[in-house]
Image 1 (cartoon, rainbow, N blue to C red):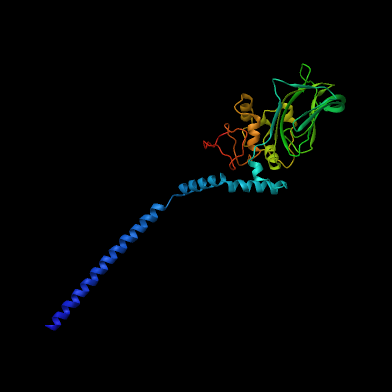
Image 2: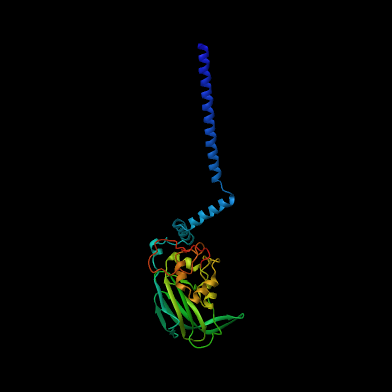
Length: 303
């Protein structure tokens, strides 16, 4: 009787252990299956992963942290002083003293000061090379001087005051986009002794790093006259941004979709290798809250 009772107890215990084991095993199996399903759900194919990585990279390139790396890179590459970030966010002083509706005439031997730039007209004997032949002729030049203590981006449209196209011009090389503090250039007007008519003059006082970035804009994009485009020389260290749609930007300026100063103001704050101007941007008249400034529509083809 006692033996039978012991056997019954042992059998019941074994059955209980087996039952517990079966329940535990099934619970572990279910938990493991759930973990596997979770892991499988988080797996992505290579194409999706690439898209996610590119999206993260794009977000980083739009961040203030990445913008600061571009500033630091320019400072190191060109050996300039680090810019004051508050100044980069601030409005650039803008001058537009002469426009097409009221051009100004400057006689040979006379000078005119407009904002930070001084324009003096000189007629001198110069050697001109044309068709492989060198001749010495009287030639009229406009000598332009930046009197400011900061770089000045400028758009200066001029021609000889008397009617008729210039038949002979000695095209010399100079920076037709930005003048450094104290920089002086001679702009060829035409052969002979001529009065000069200034048709349009726009100026933005910008930062040192802004001068480098603005000089990277192709001259063809700024709606300059053909002679200025041909003469433009930003220097050996400055490589223009070939990805900019230069012809379309110039046409947009000429159509009045935005102004020269809007385009230049934007790129005085942004490296055109990394950031894209959009047609809705306007020259800052109040400090920006932060940099970079990006197209609010998110259009990658803006500008």
